[in-house]
Image 1 (cartoon, rainbow, N blue to C red):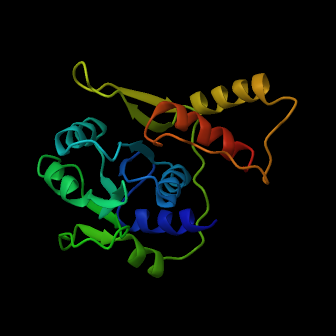
Image 2 (tube, helix red, strand yellow):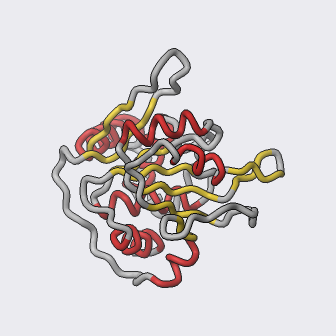
Image 3 (spheres, rainbow, N blue to C red):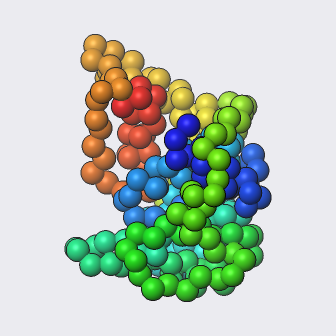
Length: 212
């Protein structure tokens, strides 16, 4: 339920199906988490790209993943000032033929170009979609997300994490560290790093398992 169910409906309207890949190029905002959950709910894999990466780094990851939809923002705040993201996405997509649609979060109210037929404002999609969407059952070996290396020493390498991988890791970690003090719905977990890195990926799935 919630916002992720609404975005699932719209992702389906944009042609996203089970097994497809969606690239998420967002700052540290709630919509990033909603987008991840929405992809998981529909059976699509997501790939988070750090918002500080260049258009070239972004296009490399989009093409390697074969993403059909990209989710970004007009900009994100850095040191109190807007840092544009949508223009980077536009440059990257000039070399990314697989992307059919772009969903844009209006984070900073920046004046950015929107391509007719391809680009869609997040808030407009939220207003028009149904808030109800049942989750899609998936096989344990279904791809959950792609996590890329930095590429600082060569071409970025994509690590493919399946539902089984994530569930097994979170279960083992929980039994090792949280057996005596499990998390619960009233707990809060702070992630001090970008959700595009590996440590926060583990942290978020562990928190979601317990409803924290």
